[in-house]
Length: 280
Image 1 (cartoon, helix red, strand yellow):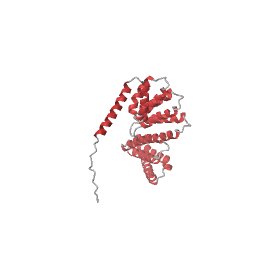
Image 2 (cartoon, helix red, strand yellow; image 1 turned 90 degrees about the vertical axis):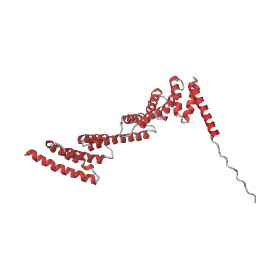
Image 3 (spheres, one colour; image 1 turned 90 degrees about the horizontal axis):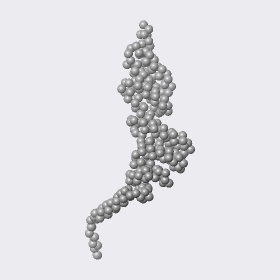
Image 4 (cartoon, helix red, strand yellow; image 1 turned 180 degrees about the vertical axis):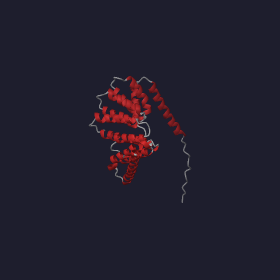
């Protein structure tokens, strides 16, 4: 029987492929730099659009930025403005993205892309919104912009998404306020904690933390009364009773309801004790 001879394995060299890729990249960079340095705006526009469509926003951006400065009033101004805004969005520069989308809305009031640009201006601000424990200035601006969009384009199919984004941002503001209230509470700054929780309740009446906040306010007022000077305790225990009367019906969780009832009973007894002392 004839034996098959094995073919000796030849180690494949990646060097020619590497050289080829390097040459292609070099030529590509050379072509790009050549167009960037040229005064051929038609070529710049063509290359910028090609790069944009490939998702190479950082390379398309300087081309669109240059074109933006020279095409104002021309037939391609709207297109360049639109691409420039999306390039900033693509490189995650949300503030400039919002600025250029907003300026697109102002400069092209009859454009069919106006609604989209208005929404994107707001959406960029949404993306700029930080974690709830940081400064929320941009969050507030995003809410205002998204709300303005829903008011201005009530029939838009983007209204539902805008409303969802507003709810998400409002939840972030609510979390910020709650964290502030808890910080005051933990530091035994009880009046500040109560004020913060009351603001939260007024601004976010549908908060899922409502019951917890009711109990925290009662607890904070009781702790505040306990630590008050003797002459102020009677009136401050009376405040505990007022808060309990106001919130008792809303305390549906049995554990919290029982704890609040205990605080109310203790405050009633202490109020009576200091009331008798004052009358002596």
